[in-house]
Image 1 (tube, rainbow, N blue to C red):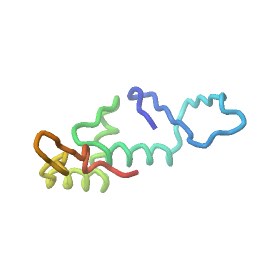
Image 2: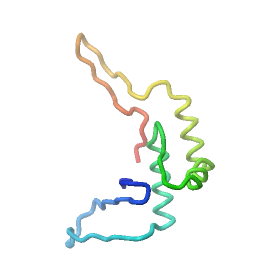
Image 3: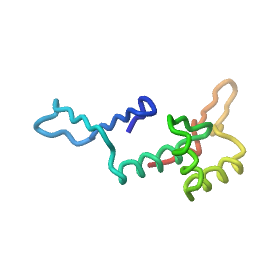
Length: 101
């Protein structure tokens, strides 16, 4: 899933079918898909969430997922983690606390 804009969501299926060049354009999103998008958006953010509808964001802020993420971020000391350093060489784990989903 990729949010291209506040009103445009791109979803790419990873399974290739016989009709792999076929596009499906939908004018609405199911409640289940919207919930999945919300969980992924909240679970992967470290800075801000931008959306075109302020009331939508207020609703998201009331969810357990959002409250857990804020708590996690507030208790996280660093975003990236130095794994190994030797002389002038460094190995970093980038986005060490990102969501694995």
